[in-house]
Image (spheres, rainbow, N blue to C red):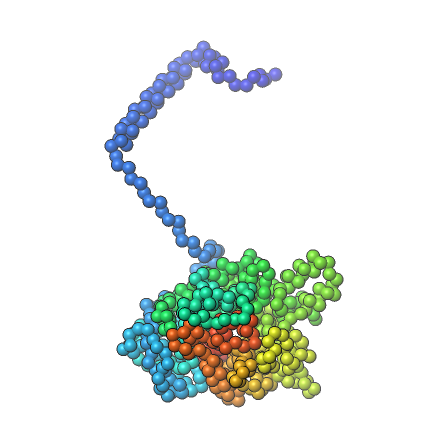
Length: 563
């Protein structure tokens, strides 16, 4: 049996001294030499240190946190940074080739001859902004015309539309929160002027901050201003110079910071208006620059949006439209509540043309930006748009579109602020945009009847203001410009010229032009949709997008491109 007592050092040394005394002597000699050397070295070092000055090095600050860049994303092409540029004074602008005195006071050298853009002005209302862009297709029409390189030679002066867009962007820059966000609830807090921009009867909810921030970002991106833009945006009301690219960068960073693990951006529970707008803003930010900072957030947002899409009542495996809440939330609720299948299916098939319109446009921006978008998802949006289209007795589309189903086509969508006039053409415009951008079929028999419905109700500003509907004006402008605008391959002149003139007159008439006021450049007049939710922030961002309709998208039908 083995000895269970374990290792005993004294017994080991005793046996070693008897059996191998020379080994023990050698070990002892080495221990003695090492100990002596250590004592000598320590004494020498202590003496040397006593004669040396002590230097205390400052602690290095921690590195500045950056947005995470996934290592698996390969480098992609980016737009070369622009030379240092600056917004310079403008003394005149052109309206239909007639020079008039500019109402805008610029900060800078009054003798400067640089212009906002060297491009031409046309009588059809097409602005010069963005017609000579440097971005990658398909956003190449959104060039930096607003903020051209310093020293640009004199040329055509900007149109009144260009100036209105510029003033709108100044207003948005003036009311951006320090953290990069925009919020209707904080407008009066960030307003740098003596009088606040708006005094609502009740406080605005913060639920829509991600959507409103996305809408404001889209206004800048629509003018070709990305996070890489180096120009100054001069606020003529306050005299402050903003770095245009920093405005966009701060807004995008804030938006990305709000993104949840599933790709949604709304706190607590997804709200599909917010999600669609965020997906569009992030996609266009990536599309303008192909910068990898925005690639993953944009793709995550698109992925969530597609997962939130409702299934078709005709085929549960096919896609359909969108509604306020996501498909995931409905399915999760019914699992927890133990609801019957019939109740679950009824809710799952529920969709509306408004949320569906924003979602399809967001997916289209993702597709144009070379991000992953399922064709089946776009096809589902079109299938729902066809479902809610009213058909006449002859089997042809009447041009009217329902909000939830074809039975509601032409009927008023009721809700808060029903004192405002209802414009059925807004549903027709949504149906047009979904079909145009998802299918690119200029021969779609729905398009012309829908355009006929829209031009029956041109933009106008009534004395009581109840005719104002910025939402209608935006989508109808986008649809008719695609169908019958200057770049449309089959333009007839029947729709766009009349609509464009009425739209420009109405939108520009409502823009605030109070010099030195915080409201200058914004749209203070509410409409039905902004009154209780987004206020002047929603109105200003959406109207800027309406005035950017001339160059924000290339023609979806493959019309000719401007040089």
